[in-house]
Length: 163
Image 1 (spheres, rainbow, N blue to C red):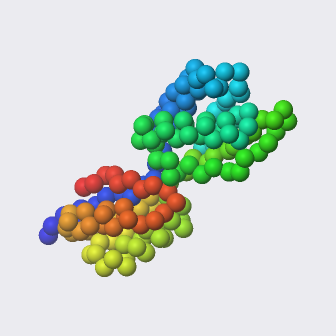
Image 2: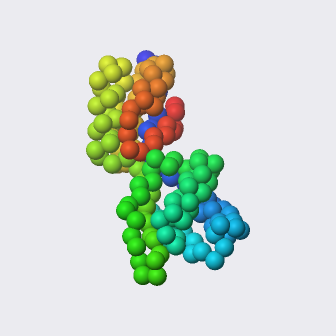
Image 3: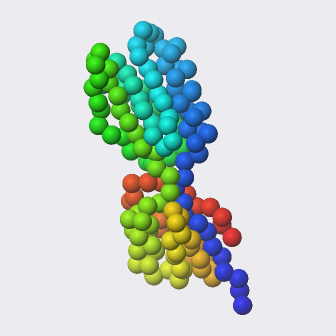
């Protein structure tokens, strides 16, 4: 009997790459002429990111540079969920962002439903914050990967442990 092949569907953020992107962004903004004398602060606490700037315009520029650094370092920007801008005393603007790692139950159900509705002969199991897909044929698994790349989710999916 043939051995079953499998892979895991995950949604992870490499926190070292996130830290590196933050450091590079701060370094770049410190040297930019249009940010001389401006307040620029980016802090990372657990899975929360806080951006501080002089006003909404500067805050958007900080976000643009930071997201550009994330893209260069292969950090999934779809997994960053920004909140509304807060205005503090001294005309400072602050914005928080959640860094999402793992697939929550709602998105996991959407993924498994999409796999079941495709009628591809594979099994999908939700395991904590990831999904294991198993099947007899590697071609079926490749088909599932192509299917999942087209599914519209608020998080980015990665495929690991392909066996």
